Length: 398
Image (cartoon, rainbow, N blue to C red; front, side, top):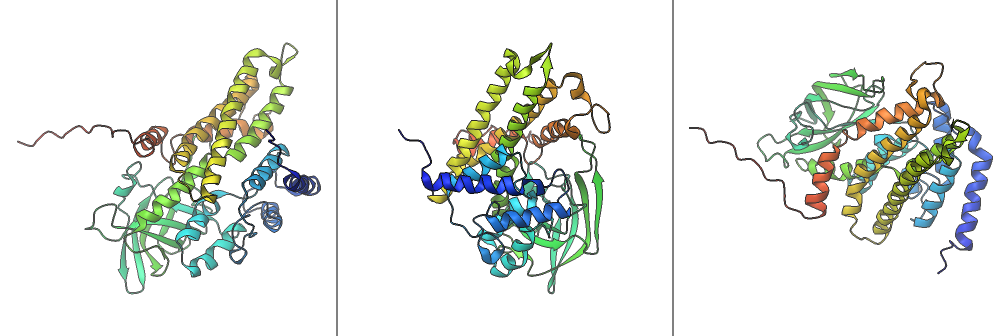
């Protein structure tokens, strides 16, 4: 059995390696998404087809035909080089593919290009204090007043709201309709009068989340994706993309390669940890999970190209990916011994505290974006067609 990629793909791999050898020093190294280095790197990647590869040119992408093996080669070589694969975030990972599927031509032209280039940063207005796991219970309202929607309500856990230019937001436009039928999907600017943002400090010590309040926020009527009252269809499309992005196998591979390097340098009694049976066993267990996650990603890519059903394969990405990252980062912390407890400005912190920050961040993501418990219910009931969890009947009122 010949498992080689063949001359065409090996030639493409050589192109990727040459690009990385030539340009990797220009890649951002921890700068924020608005930093000049990050924006310049994103522009270079798009021009060479290493990000936004299959997004049409007329919308700001590279415009290549989908190719599973080329996508895999790009991911492998960027991971091996420990080099940034470009900007991500909710706009690029979630909104762009949803607009390609469900947006109007005007919306595609207005939003996709600037979002891909990092010129337009987005946040997501979904969860509310009383509508988390049961998102369809949301109460933030939008009432049509002439040519504008008037939005009132509150969102919570609004990631990046404090730096975002725009928000994609679920609102209730038909209060008398069944809860899944009365929701619409609006797009509006974050500097619109009536928006208040209150940062929430998470367990990493940073304010990655926010409370967001809307008081008579006026939104142009045409800034709706899909039909009025049918926003739940858009919401489900975007949630699928969110779960894919939260368990990204390519980023996980890059972190795994960094973990290998760490275990080669850390020692116990003069012995490298990678040669220590206990640590090597833990590393190999994680390696197996990384390989499984990447194979599942190929299954999803193949299904997209062949118009096949990959529902179950997509369902497991968020659950497996976030738990894997938490365990991976945790092994690095254990490998550093007492230095693994260092954090923030501690003089003994390693790698700028990235292992500790990612460990805590992914502990949060096991909860955020749909808890692991909720994900398991979704997988069992919708993916494996198992019986739903029995509901406890409410006692009758006498």
